[in-house]
Length: 176
Image 1 (cartoon, rainbow, N blue to C red):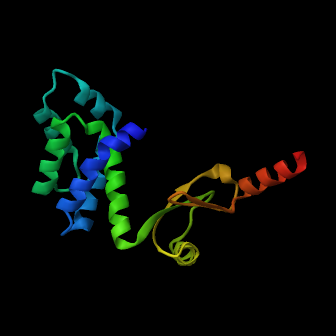
Image 2 (cartoon, rainbow, N blue to C red):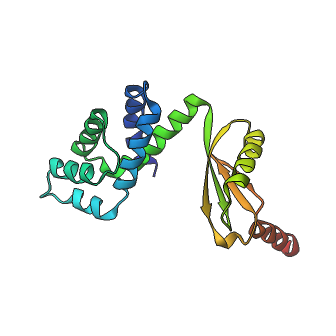
C-alpha cells in the first residue's frame, strides 16, 4: 500500500506541524478518527455518490466518543472533501510515527499467548526499553497460537521468544 502511504504523508505532516503545541491532545482525537474510519460500513456510506461530504462529516462527528476540537473538525472536513477518508488510518499511523520521532520513543507491540498483568508488563517494558535503547509505548495483543512466551515488535525489529518460534527453529534444524 505504498500509494496510500504516499497520499497520507502530506496530511500527517501538515497535521503534525499544525498541532505542534498540543501533540498529545491531537493524538487522542486522531486515534479516535482512525478507529471510526476503519469501519467498513462508514467507508461504504462515504463512497456513495448520493452522500454529501457534510453528511459524512455529521456521521463521523456524531459517532465520535471524543469531543472534537475545532482543529479536528477542520482536519476531518478537509480529509472528507478531498475524498481521502480511506487514507485516514494511514494518516493517523504516520502522525504517530512523527510524534514518536520527536519524543524519541517508539511503539512496541507485545504479542502474548496469555494475558500479562500490569506489574509484569511494567517490568517487561523496563527490560525492553533497555534492550531497544529508547522509550517505548507498550501495548499487548493476545495470540494464543504462540503457545507460550512473547513476541515483541518495535518498528521493523522483532524479538521472538515464543514457543512457536522455538518449535519452528527446531523443525528447521531437524529438516536441514
